[in-house]
Length: 208
Image 1: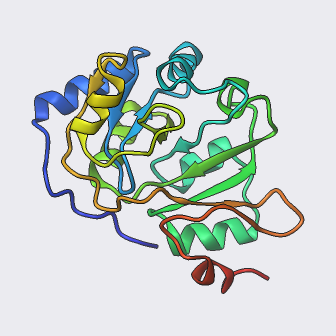
Image 2: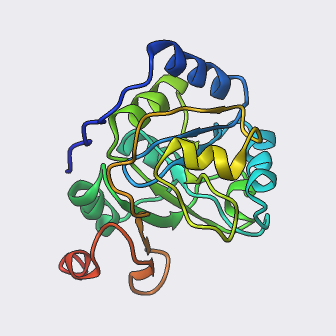
């Protein structure tokens, strides 16, 4: 399992506490991860999740990925087979997102009505701390307007989204700068949906 990367800039404890409180009360924040800045809302707040589509200008038929703190939370939202467990142990926390059969706890607003959900464990100390403190999985879609590129700086989030979110938590530049690789494990054989932080060749060494 990969280790979370050390953040280069730490926000103040007060700002972190404010971000956690907003999420616990059904708000939406932008926060850094190991890849890019994301829009986070708590899984138990469908209305907040619905706001994310408005914030991004994103079609509600498109699914949103989830960020979880550990394998236990991943088990809460998705069905894991042996290959999923292998990939989780090898590449998470880190820049790999897995599409897996969802469990009933995941509302349809997250998945666009699909029976699957995209999940990852971010390799970012601050993001993991916030997920654990909020006590539930968070959405992890990129904090940008739909159709524009994802961003790695809080200032760029503000430029694109302005005051549409309840808070932009500035944790410095995201260390990865590239979105996660997405692998669909609900297909007859694993399918790379998006090339990203984890190279295809490295992933395919673990496929049966």
